[in-house]
Length: 251
Image 1: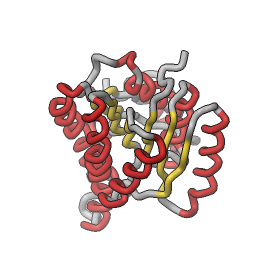
Image 2: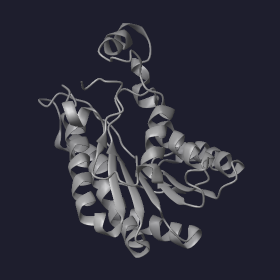
Image 3: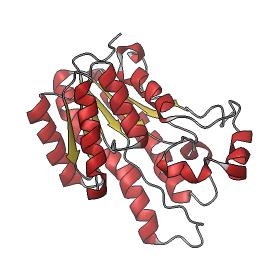
């Protein structure tokens, strides 16, 4: 079943991890994919992903673009519209963490996390809603985090940014529901990606897994499956919600 046949999606921060898994899942369901990566060091991986997506029979293109820069987002979305013709789905996935105790956190560290994790969601969403409003349809999916719901010591900036994403999501859903544009968030728990590689093995991993009812970390594909649901018509009556894909960590 091709749940996204003929649609076009934007996925930010897709050169690796959850973003890469989402792009591949979308393409496997017939969706054209325009995705971003930010650094020169990610260019090779991004180009390889582009070829994987095309091999699945869809149109795909990698763009080196900074989601945390308003002008770059505007230019990127305009380029996508010229190349693909429309934007049906936007997955705001770009994110970072700069963990530190509040006592030691600098304003620069705080601002960087807020800019990449929260401001980027505003920047991208502001651009994609224009074509979506014209088409009177669209699905916006914002990647939050379970930390945005429950908090965590040493992650005040990350928690604040991800909690902000949830509030933003609810507000956008209320603003744009009358135009048939849905906006939802996903709050992953611990996911096996490069960002959490330090937790993968050993006593540290066992300690975290002990607090997860399902007893394991998520795979990137686990999160991609939830994203597919929210992007497709299977969730046509779901908006303004946050799905906690955390293995029960927040129970």
